[in-house]
Image (cartoon, rainbow, N blue to C red; front, side):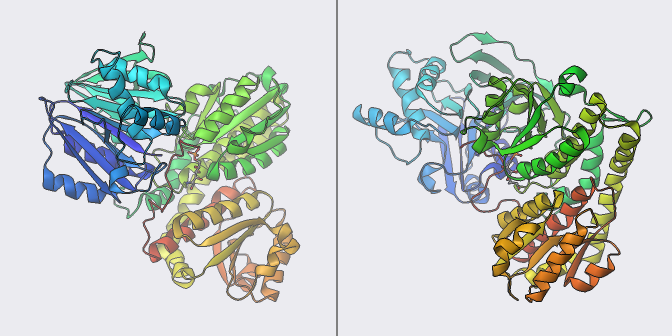
Length: 619
Ligand code: AGP
């Protein structure tokens, strides 16, 4: 949830650390801090509550000098987001400085233990416990060896954590470590310099050769040289992998917000999602990295989809795809529930984890549990090299490029493409889907990016969503209704509105409306109905009638040329006619735009909504 960075080399560390933090700010943004160290071990620490801009002002005024340092952008877990809780935190003598992403679950016990030994705590954080623990071992038992003091301290911590530490006594060295599923630690080096960061965008402008630290590993980072080891001190060989993402992809590219860019680039990200997966001539889907042979697929008894948030809603649509096209029963579980409900898993199950970041703690734990209990596992994931890619037996990469906006958009549509590919693939390998049906679906998939591009171009040209935002930005509640696959789209649309506009919105199955929620409807409570012309269209039409009979306002995501909804609904959000499996991928686009434009109209920070962080690496 937090972002950590580290630099050591020949250049001024402060601007490099600030630039890295700017690129990681999506991970947490309630306070930030950095520590810069010169070659004599003199350290200057700057911290500030609030957004990164506050820290940047302080750094500009103070000009910290030094060519090594660590930085942090925080999403508060222990203690409010005020300056004294901002990282870095230091040992009592100020010699050891630490930044952390994660949670020290036994921090109350450790704090009591350290207090009894005379340690004084200046913050409410669990991070300060780590700094004090390292200090204790450094002076008692580890003979002034920071690396070993850190190993001893880490052995006392419970819970997932990623940590970077530095010491005034060893000014040409940073030490990073990772315990469990706590956000990533990416490391990269280039002539005379070395970089650390929670995520690749903070490093990409320096190098595209990156190592992702595994759980239980440590990196000792010196200028131009990184040494890897286990926490017990055994050397580990880690070869950097080349990353296909570029620094430019991770920039805003002239858009006001990352989210806006990510919405409008979906024609390209959908094209990329298909890359390497379609054999058009033979009407076949290729999923080489899934690592499941035809025999195993034929014996599949069940698919369990595990995910959180937006990725979970993609899973709800995946259930329709897989049951109808691959003929296999599917359960969709919130990863956070699955991991604690003693699930019944068998060796003929396939667990599919969907995760943009590949670092969501609940999704990692749920996939790990399914694997331990004998299921084959596969990840639908966007971030290359993320933990889930190493945990699962197979991977279907989203290939959507970096998604920085906290509200997920292009990763959702890429996940839907991957789920559709998976359903076609299983249908193809088991013989349940014939070549003609596959051919139709492949044609539909090939047409999808063009359709999405045309929809988005028209939306921009017409200014429709900015006008709708003008009308609805003062509404206090919304109901979103859909049926079948579009029930999941209704839930995703409501989530988008909630998380970036702070307007209450509920996504509901349209058929359940009459069992309660209809009581909410009046002139003040608008309803968004997702009602393209599909197999449940007639049912959605009756829903619209019932809302209108109660004087509710209706915004309808409707097929272009739908004369009935053009008359019955108050506003139409048009999408093109398409193959029924493609429709949900198009139907979500107007809802992303609607939420985005309302947030803009309200003057909100679209990319950094309050209380949220992009990667939820803690429970
Ligand atoms: C989406 O807009 C959210 N910010 C959030 O629900 C997100 O989808 C969820 O945290 C899962 O993330 P993941 O896909 O990276 O695992």
